[in-house]
Image (cartoon, rainbow, N blue to C red; front, side):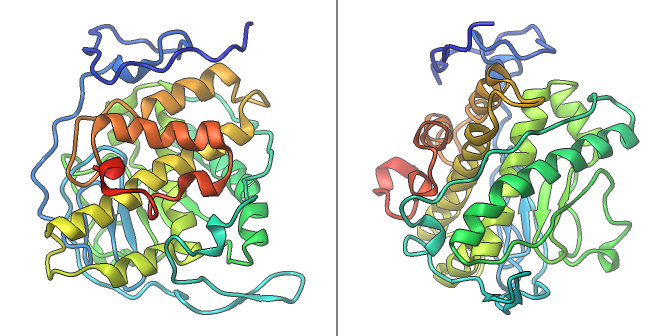
Length: 327
């Protein structure tokens, strides 16, 4: 197979009606499904943000790539802001900084990893196994970047079922299916990707599943580094609904796209993630409509491309970018 990079899709291209179950690198499948309409956000960053993030002290819940509405409550994220010890005996702590975060220093990049993924299927146990293996690969790839930045790297759990009720979750009430496809809870470092929600959104499209989980893991990297904590400190309004707060949220979400694509650049062409599948997963970040919390469709894709092409965390510094590039 020719591994040459295909041209990126035109964000203005109309969606195609046909479903393409297997990603085609020459026609990336961001247009295989119509754009998801954006619900007007009732976002409480201290509780939740639509398809964005839920800040729980240092930020506990981050919802999916598709902009949706979420309401929640504030809970302290266990271990947030505290030191942890690596096997080397060195204590590491999150650094509550944005552009000056050590994770965004020059020369830091996820490492290579061979993702050996099982078959993707509709059975919840099969989906759970697939996500678990993908999370293992994400952990392996991001480990050297967090180690070089001397920041924590807690393990992530992926769950294809929602907590039974708020008492079972460190992030309070879960969003509904109409509000999110998947979300990240920093309080228990878990990516919740309910099987029926994910299958309704992505079917068996591997690129879409991989792009979503990689984006949610990007929020975990933001939590571990201290970026989410620093972002929470910048919020200015009680409901996080001001123009300034929405810009902060867009910078968070666009960086998560960039981090997701950064991982894809590190693993493309090895194991189960071929270069064509990685190309299609990156292109999938450009499938949503314009959003005041996720950014324009063009910017959602352009920041993913920045990570995929730049290959370093510095390429994902949305915090230093002018406002026009995160609109």
